[in-house]
Length: 221
Image 1 (tube, rainbow, N blue to C red):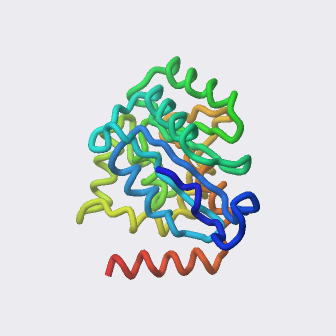
Image 2: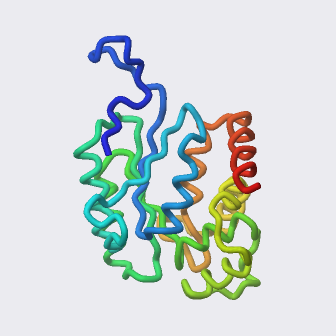
Protein backbone atom coordinates (compact mmCIF):
# COMPACT_ATOMS: atom_id res chain seq x y z
CA UNK A 1 0.00 0.00 0.00
CA UNK A 2 3.00 2.31 0.21
CA UNK A 3 2.74 5.43 -1.91
CA UNK A 4 5.67 7.46 -0.56
CA UNK A 5 7.38 7.91 -3.97
CA UNK A 6 4.30 8.62 -6.08
CA UNK A 7 4.36 12.11 -7.56
CA UNK A 8 7.93 12.83 -6.56
CA UNK A 9 10.89 13.86 -8.72
CA UNK A 10 13.55 11.25 -8.05
CA UNK A 11 16.52 13.36 -9.18
CA UNK A 12 16.37 15.72 -6.21
CA UNK A 13 17.48 14.85 -2.65
CA UNK A 14 14.94 13.03 -0.50
CA UNK A 15 14.79 15.84 2.06
CA UNK A 16 13.69 18.26 -0.67
CA UNK A 17 11.00 16.10 -2.27
CA UNK A 18 7.88 18.01 -3.20
CA UNK A 19 4.33 16.75 -3.74
CA UNK A 20 2.38 17.99 -6.72
CA UNK A 21 -1.01 16.33 -6.07
CA UNK A 22 -3.82 15.95 -3.55
CA UNK A 23 -4.51 12.48 -2.20
CA UNK A 24 -8.09 11.27 -1.75
CA UNK A 25 -7.96 7.97 0.14
CA UNK A 26 -11.32 6.19 0.21
CA UNK A 27 -12.44 3.37 2.50
CA UNK A 28 -15.82 1.82 1.72
CA UNK A 29 -18.24 -0.44 3.51
CA UNK A 30 -18.98 -2.40 0.34
CA UNK A 31 -16.43 -4.49 -1.49
CA UNK A 32 -17.58 -4.60 -5.12
CA UNK A 33 -19.57 -1.75 -6.69
CA UNK A 34 -17.93 0.91 -4.54
CA UNK A 35 -14.45 -0.38 -5.29
CA UNK A 36 -15.15 -0.72 -9.03
CA UNK A 37 -16.55 2.81 -9.15
CA UNK A 38 -13.88 4.69 -7.22
CA UNK A 39 -10.98 2.86 -8.85
CA UNK A 40 -12.08 4.36 -12.18
CA UNK A 41 -11.00 7.74 -10.82
CA UNK A 42 -7.34 6.73 -10.68
CA UNK A 43 -5.53 8.70 -13.36
CA UNK A 44 -8.31 11.28 -13.66
CA UNK A 45 -5.94 14.23 -13.15
CA UNK A 46 -2.28 14.97 -12.50
CA UNK A 47 -3.40 17.07 -9.54
CA UNK A 48 -5.35 14.25 -7.90
CA UNK A 49 -4.45 10.79 -6.69
CA UNK A 50 -7.33 8.52 -5.69
CA UNK A 51 -6.53 5.44 -3.65
CA UNK A 52 -9.05 2.82 -2.63
CA UNK A 53 -8.09 1.57 0.82
CA UNK A 54 -7.99 -2.22 0.64
CA UNK A 55 -8.33 -4.53 3.58
CA UNK A 56 -5.06 -6.45 3.32
CA UNK A 57 -6.37 -9.28 5.47
CA UNK A 58 -9.78 -9.72 3.84
CA UNK A 59 -9.41 -8.56 0.23
CA UNK A 60 -12.03 -10.89 -1.21
CA UNK A 61 -14.72 -10.32 1.43
CA UNK A 62 -13.77 -7.63 3.95
CA UNK A 63 -15.86 -7.07 7.10
CA UNK A 64 -18.20 -4.18 6.36
CA UNK A 65 -19.09 -2.76 9.76
CA UNK A 66 -18.54 1.01 10.08
CA UNK A 67 -16.06 0.48 12.91
CA UNK A 68 -14.05 -1.92 10.77
CA UNK A 69 -14.00 0.61 7.92
CA UNK A 70 -12.72 3.21 10.39
CA UNK A 71 -9.97 0.89 11.65
CA UNK A 72 -8.97 0.07 8.07
CA UNK A 73 -8.53 3.78 7.34
CA UNK A 74 -6.56 4.29 10.54
CA UNK A 75 -4.22 1.42 9.62
CA UNK A 76 -3.73 2.98 6.19
CA UNK A 77 -2.75 6.34 7.67
CA UNK A 78 -0.27 4.70 10.04
CA UNK A 79 1.53 2.95 7.19
CA UNK A 80 1.51 5.68 4.54
CA UNK A 81 3.17 9.07 4.22
CA UNK A 82 0.32 11.61 4.15
CA UNK A 83 0.55 15.37 4.35
CA UNK A 84 -1.78 18.07 5.67
CA UNK A 85 -3.61 18.50 2.36
CA UNK A 86 -4.50 14.83 1.93
CA UNK A 87 -7.98 13.66 2.90
CA UNK A 88 -9.58 10.43 4.09
CA UNK A 89 -13.14 9.56 3.12
CA UNK A 90 -15.28 6.83 4.67
CA UNK A 91 -18.15 5.81 2.39
CA UNK A 92 -20.90 3.91 4.19
CA UNK A 93 -24.58 2.96 4.02
CA UNK A 94 -27.40 3.69 6.42
CA UNK A 95 -29.58 0.63 5.83
CA UNK A 96 -27.55 -1.99 7.69
CA UNK A 97 -26.35 -0.03 10.71
CA UNK A 98 -27.91 1.87 13.57
CA UNK A 99 -27.43 5.57 13.99
CA UNK A 100 -25.43 5.01 17.18
CA UNK A 101 -22.66 3.09 15.40
CA UNK A 102 -22.50 5.56 12.51
CA UNK A 103 -22.44 8.47 14.96
CA UNK A 104 -19.52 6.86 16.78
CA UNK A 105 -17.55 6.70 13.55
CA UNK A 106 -18.54 10.25 12.61
CA UNK A 107 -17.50 11.60 16.00
CA UNK A 108 -14.15 9.85 15.70
CA UNK A 109 -13.54 11.42 12.29
CA UNK A 110 -14.36 14.86 13.65
CA UNK A 111 -11.28 14.55 15.85
CA UNK A 112 -9.03 14.01 12.81
CA UNK A 113 -8.03 16.67 10.30
CA UNK A 114 -9.43 16.14 6.78
CA UNK A 115 -11.36 12.99 7.68
CA UNK A 116 -14.90 12.72 6.32
CA UNK A 117 -17.87 10.36 6.58
CA UNK A 118 -20.26 10.33 3.62
CA UNK A 119 -23.40 8.24 3.96
CA UNK A 120 -26.01 7.01 1.50
CA UNK A 121 -29.56 6.34 2.64
CA UNK A 122 -30.27 3.54 2.21
CA UNK A 123 -27.19 2.43 0.23
CA UNK A 124 -24.46 3.28 -2.29
CA UNK A 125 -26.71 2.50 -5.25
CA UNK A 126 -28.61 5.73 -4.47
CA UNK A 127 -25.50 7.63 -5.57
CA UNK A 128 -25.29 5.61 -8.77
CA UNK A 129 -28.94 6.28 -9.59
CA UNK A 130 -28.37 10.04 -9.36
CA UNK A 131 -25.97 9.78 -12.29
CA UNK A 132 -28.89 9.23 -14.65
CA UNK A 133 -32.00 10.23 -12.68
CA UNK A 134 -32.63 13.77 -11.50
CA UNK A 135 -35.60 12.99 -9.25
CA UNK A 136 -35.81 9.60 -7.54
CA UNK A 137 -39.25 10.14 -6.00
CA UNK A 138 -40.99 8.24 -8.80
CA UNK A 139 -38.83 5.15 -8.24
CA UNK A 140 -40.51 4.34 -4.90
CA UNK A 141 -37.25 3.47 -3.17
CA UNK A 142 -37.35 2.65 0.53
CA UNK A 143 -34.84 -0.20 0.96
CA UNK A 144 -31.44 -1.22 -0.31
CA UNK A 145 -33.12 -3.98 -2.31
CA UNK A 146 -35.28 -1.36 -4.05
CA UNK A 147 -32.15 0.60 -5.00
CA UNK A 148 -30.40 -2.43 -6.43
CA UNK A 149 -33.48 -3.43 -8.42
CA UNK A 150 -33.78 0.07 -9.89
CA UNK A 151 -30.11 0.06 -10.82
CA UNK A 152 -30.46 -3.35 -12.47
CA UNK A 153 -33.38 -2.02 -14.51
CA UNK A 154 -31.15 0.83 -15.71
CA UNK A 155 -28.33 -1.56 -16.60
CA UNK A 156 -29.87 -4.49 -18.52
CA UNK A 157 -26.42 -5.52 -19.74
CA UNK A 158 -25.02 -5.50 -16.22
CA UNK A 159 -23.47 -2.75 -14.10
CA UNK A 160 -20.39 -1.16 -15.64
CA UNK A 161 -18.81 1.66 -13.58
CA UNK A 162 -17.43 3.33 -16.70
CA UNK A 163 -20.96 4.12 -17.87
CA UNK A 164 -21.63 5.95 -14.62
CA UNK A 165 -18.32 7.61 -13.83
CA UNK A 166 -18.47 9.75 -16.99
CA UNK A 167 -21.70 11.25 -15.59
CA UNK A 168 -20.20 12.16 -12.22
CA UNK A 169 -20.96 15.87 -12.66
CA UNK A 170 -24.63 15.02 -13.27
CA UNK A 171 -24.65 12.96 -10.09
CA UNK A 172 -23.13 15.80 -8.07
CA UNK A 173 -25.75 18.26 -9.29
CA UNK A 174 -28.70 15.88 -8.86
CA UNK A 175 -27.73 14.57 -5.42
CA UNK A 176 -26.89 18.03 -4.12
CA UNK A 177 -30.25 19.49 -5.13
CA UNK A 178 -32.12 16.50 -3.69
CA UNK A 179 -30.32 16.62 -0.33
CA UNK A 180 -32.37 18.76 2.05
CA UNK A 181 -30.62 17.65 5.24
CA UNK A 182 -28.49 20.26 6.98
CA UNK A 183 -26.20 17.88 8.82
CA UNK A 184 -24.03 14.89 7.97
CA UNK A 185 -26.84 12.30 8.02
CA UNK A 186 -28.84 12.14 4.75
CA UNK A 187 -32.57 11.63 4.63
CA UNK A 188 -34.21 8.67 2.86
CA UNK A 189 -33.37 8.56 -0.84
CA UNK A 190 -30.39 10.88 -0.40
CA UNK A 191 -26.62 10.58 -0.34
CA UNK A 192 -23.70 12.71 0.81
CA UNK A 193 -21.22 11.19 -1.64
CA UNK A 194 -21.57 14.31 -3.76
CA UNK A 195 -19.44 16.06 -1.10
CA UNK A 196 -16.55 13.73 -1.89
CA UNK A 197 -17.05 13.97 -5.65
CA UNK A 198 -17.38 17.76 -5.57
CA UNK A 199 -14.25 18.15 -3.45
CA UNK A 200 -12.27 15.95 -5.84
CA UNK A 201 -13.55 17.52 -9.05
CA UNK A 202 -12.38 20.97 -7.95
CA UNK A 203 -8.85 19.88 -8.86
CA UNK A 204 -9.75 18.48 -12.29
CA UNK A 205 -9.57 20.74 -15.33
CA UNK A 206 -12.21 20.69 -18.06
CA UNK A 207 -9.65 19.34 -20.52
CA UNK A 208 -8.56 16.57 -18.15
CA UNK A 209 -12.15 15.51 -17.57
CA UNK A 210 -12.98 15.54 -21.27
CA UNK A 211 -9.93 13.36 -21.95
CA UNK A 212 -10.99 11.06 -19.12
CA UNK A 213 -14.51 10.71 -20.54
CA UNK A 214 -13.09 9.93 -23.96
CA UNK A 215 -10.90 7.16 -22.49
CA UNK A 216 -13.80 5.65 -20.57
CA UNK A 217 -16.07 5.63 -23.59
CA UNK A 218 -13.31 4.18 -25.76
CA UNK A 219 -12.96 1.32 -23.27
CA UNK A 220 -16.68 0.70 -23.50
CA UNK A 221 -16.43 0.39 -27.28
